[in-house]
Length: 400
Image (tube, rainbow, N blue to C red; front, top):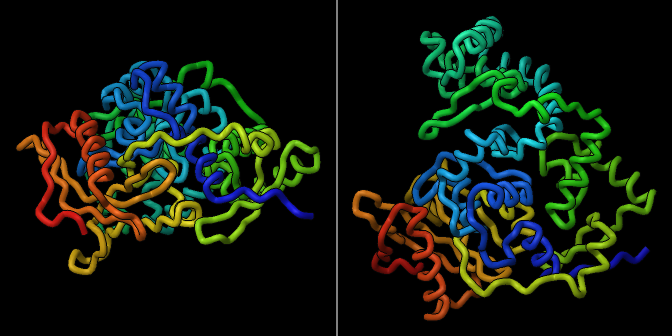
């Protein structure tokens, strides 16, 4: 059977539109506007690196330029419209999705208990009930407040003491939740004290979680392989996603198509029939501006997919000696329209109020002329309030 073929530019635009990156950044950046954005994305990855702005803050700012970090803390810590937990990594997730995470809690309970025993030793098992009782009796805690004795030898995970591992285990399995952060330090409390009752008390059967995970992932990706559907939330297995896709196709609810990658290669994906039918007239044109993206932006976090779709190979060179790095340790991708055009190494020097651009690498085939430089400078000046800076400076010979 000959499947419909979606050319690379249409695939990029469909994908970026699903990630709220085709339109002009608008919205209040707080309250209901911010909650709606997080719901549209599905989740926002949380990361501590703060060379210019934290990953989650830049992800949200890229789509709502009025956003400021305190708005997310209000939404999460006061309004309880979101909660923090795990997808492929730690993330902020709409609170309404909490019932679907019960399947992950149940699956992680046995898996992590055995896996972490091999990794950290079994001492944390004896601490689980003690830590849970301490939180129940005394309220929210952070890891430094419990388990003062450290492990006698390195466990291979930042030398965490058993109580810290027990605390993290109780969070990963749903008994505890993150109630707030101070700086970037997490405070844990009983889940019943954090998650609103309407979401806490809702229970979804396993087949309902699988169906929701696949449908909601496809809504947020535009098109996907079954493996990508499973990986989006990391709630279900690839086999479960494959079985769901086969059943949905048999019912006529799901279509297949071939996506043309940046190299010209084609791969088979699933897509909603209405999305496929609307490709010719529903795809918006990209906003003609430069965007600085977080390395953990939801559009780029799957590095293999980003390379296939955009021809953009991105790796954070954490363990490579500086003298051997092709790029800086932590560089920010640059997107213009529907293309990746470069990557930039910059630091917020908050003591002097300057955003310091140290280096910029255009992608192959990209001519970095005055017009493109002007669009970059306009974006960097928009970034200044988020970075906590007042001016932009460029290093000599910054253009690589």
